[in-house]
Length: 83
Image 1 (cartoon, rainbow, N blue to C red):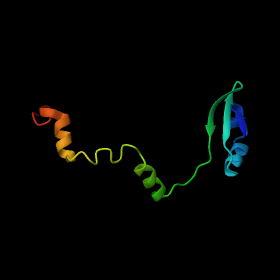
Image 2 (spheres, rainbow, N blue to C red; image 1 turned 90 degrees about the horizontal axis):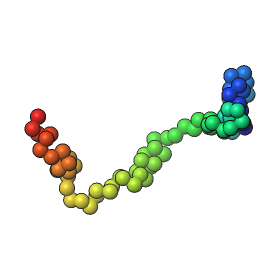
Image 3 (cartoon, one colour; image 1 turned 135 degrees about the horizontal axis):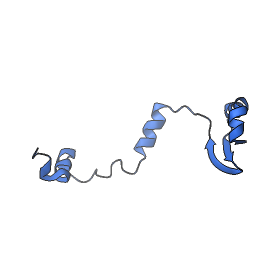
Image 4 (cartoon, rainbow, N blue to C red; image 1 turned 45 degrees about the vertical axis):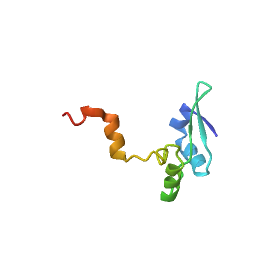
């Protein structure tokens, strides 16, 4: 569904109804698309956990052989303990 900014103001019920039907709403201003309102989707804890675990930074230091504390001390240098 396409909706103008005026539709958001005066036809909010219709916009919300289309979201209830699972449709995305493209918001236009002066004929040009400005954004998209998408239906809300509940996520479960397992979906969130699996998406976090798929991130490329997870496990990138797995084979480094140093602990987190050792690496943080190396990165901070002497200035952290000098306080």
